[in-house]
Image (cartoon, rainbow, N blue to C red):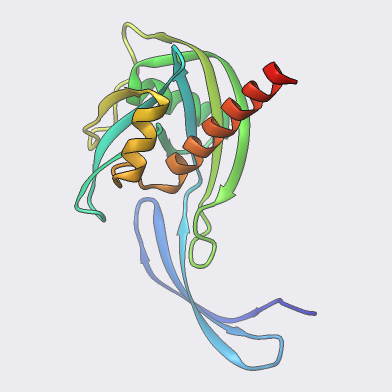
Length: 186
């Protein structure tokens, strides 16, 4: 079956610093036409980082939610940066930590129904505090939090952890714990 949609017309209705809003008229495989509202968004990286077996997070105000959210460190990939370089920079900027070991966990599209942002998630280990870390972005106000497994799950259940990357991080952490327990019993 053909699922492709041919773009007939494309109109950019707004272009900001990190997003562009585009309306596309498309032709469906059966010949009918439809409208697609699309957000073009720069790609980002996020970091699942552990300090002494606890998850390193940041709390920050999120205007679309009109409240704070507790999240794993993350940020946009700057021009010329790799996803790993962005993750390393964001970890230091947001938390004042660096990591010795890095591994890519996965990458995914957060909301492919209307947005093309791709998020790459890394795990960082063997962390150390940085004396003179990279400066936070001018518009960021963050509070660093180091959470036990139980604290993190309670925060998710209460809705204070609510974004997809951090919810993913908690399930990843849970999976890793189950794998570790399985190897000790096997």
